[in-house]
Length: 295
Ligand SMILES: O=C(O)/C=C(\C=C(/O)C(=O)O)C(=O)O
Picture 1 (cartoon, rainbow, N blue to C red):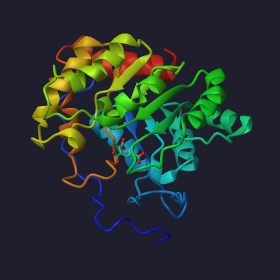
Picture 2 (picture 1 turned 60 degrees about the horizontal axis):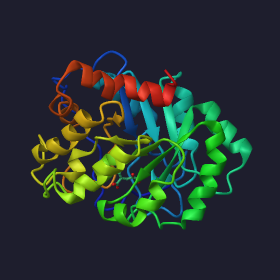
Picture 3 (picture 1 turned 180 degrees about the vertical axis):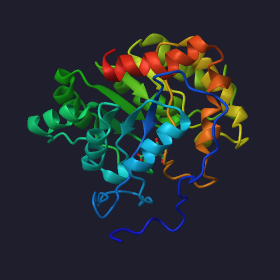
């Protein structure tokens, strides 16, 4: 094989349980990835991890098994700014997938047009240092100038400690801004405490800011299968900002060290954080369709 996955890499769950929760018709898995296969879509030389391959066929099979209709496929750092695997998956999805790409400030108009034609509707800025060496604000502002005319939005991934430091930059972004995984709250701290309430203030004071209420498996201290300690945080955001939340599996779950989540159990997390059919429809259908399909 062209690439060897990292020695401690956990492969995605090959036989997830069938979720008890049945997603509403048209439900969207709004945060997932495709990895390689590496001998067709090489991993980026600047990557900080090498995953197992996780291709579009498995992603779409999981979509169908879990009862979802569509995917938003997000470029992961292991592919850097090489979006070929993402574009390949989008083109194979027959309109049932949209993408969030990674581009450099040198991206050409032709490259942006090709990405848009494939179904890309946003770019991702990853500030998690174990994944990417951060760039100066000017680098990101240059990219935003290039993508704003396309109507794209920005997805940002950062650690809770970064929020205070980058508040000025995050609140200056002119597009819709979607935060991955609730800004990674420390769930040992109280929901009403100053740390999580800083993130709540970001959403409360900036109506262009959305959040994914995903990845309990990354945040939980109490652990699987229920990730009980994450429920209050995700539920709070769904109930406070029902029109600006998204949910995703995060398949194939890169960099999970403690365990590999069962995707069926992640789906059964949804009714615990979105307790009514209306909130479930907003979270899984209305919000992602509005943002990614312009519905
Ligand atoms: O998949 C996620 O959203 C989380 C992770 C990885 C990435 O986002 C990435 O490599 O782009 C992580 O926390 O390691």
